[in-house]
Image (cartoon, rainbow, N blue to C red; front, side):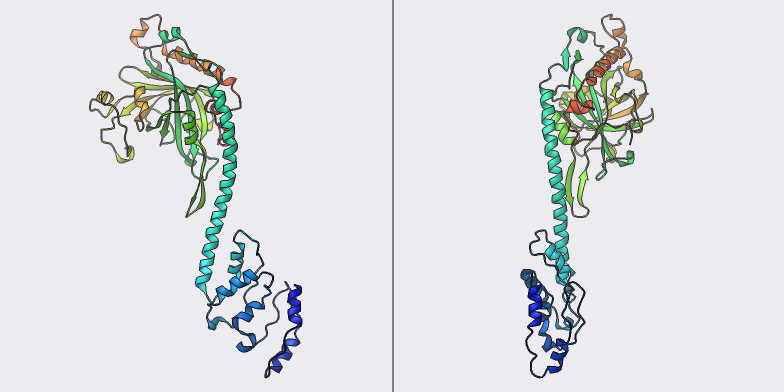
Length: 451
C-alpha cells in the first residue's frame, strides 16, 4: 500500500531521551506487505503509545471501518495482555455482505477478551446456518415452481378427460353381490429424513396405499383417471404388507375423500431448519405399484383383493414390501370404543354416526365395509391370505351361482385389470401413476423395482 510506505518513510523524530530506541528503529528494513511479520522490536509502553498505536501498525488503513470495529472490540482488553505481541492480520472485506468481516475479526488474537470472541463466534454460526438454509430454500423454491407448472398442465389433462370412466348398465347388473367396492389402487413409500434413495426397508419411514373407488357398474376407458375427490389415503405404520398368513398389521385412514391436489400435498418433499442439525430434508413419496382392487365379502369375512398392472414384473422392492403380482388380505375394522394396547391406539380415534357404530354390537372387530373408509382415523387389521393368488376373496356366493346373469368375482376383476392395462399403456410419460395423479417428475421419484 502506497499510503503505508509513505507513513513509514516520514516517521516523526524520536522524543528526547529515546535516541537509542529511535536509531534502532531507523536501522530496520521497511516491512514488506504479505511476507510475514517484521522482526519484533522491544519497546516500552510509552514508546509504543499503548494498544491504540499497536492496532494502527497492522496495516489496516485500507479498511477504516473494520479497523474502527477492531479498536472498539479490543479497547476493553486488560493491560496485562498488552505485551503479548501483535494480533493476526485482518483481511480487508469492507464490501462483504455475508458476515465475512465478522469472521476475519475472529481470526485476530483477542485473548484479552474471551467473552467478545465467544459472542462473535456465536454470531458467525447463526449467520452461516441462516445463509445455508436460505440457499437450500431458494433452490427448493425454484424446483417447486417448475414442478407446480408441470402439475398444473397435468391437472388440465385430467380435468379435460371425460372418457376414463364409462357407465355400463349391463355390466352393473352382472356385478357379483360379493363385490362391495372396486377401483384403482396405488402403493407408495417415503424415505426417512435426509435419505433420498433408500437402500432397504430400514431406510423407509412409512408406506401408503391410495384407493380410488369406481362406480360398481363402470368400465375403464382411456386417459388419466378423472378426479372425483373420493380418494382415500391409508397409512401402514409397519411399512410393509403381510407376507404370510401369520402376519397381521394395522392400517389407518389418514385422509378420506381426498382430491388429487390433497394427495400431491401429502406426498411432496419438505425442507425445514432445526437447531441441532441445521437444514433437514423430508423426501417426497415414491410409487412402487399400481393396479386394480376389489373389496369383497364372503359373509363372515371381508377381503381386499388386488391385481397389479405396473410394474409388469415385480422386483426386490415389491417383494420386500409384501407385494405379489396379485394377492388378497382378510380385513377387519377395529371398534374405536373398544380398549386396545397403547401402541395400537390412535390419540383421536374415528367417530362414526350412531347407525354405523351399532354395527359393531359392542364387539372389538367387525368385517370391514367400504363406508368405514370414509372416516378419518378408521383402523383396520390386514391379515395375510392369498400370496400370489386372490384366494377366498373371489369366491362366488351361493345365491349368485344360481343366477345366470351374474358374473363370477374373478371374471370381473380380470376384466377390470385388462381395461386398466390398456388404459395405462397409452398414458403420457414413463410412469402411469404420474399421469393419473398429476405428479411432476421434478418433485417426485419415478416408480422403482430395485433399491
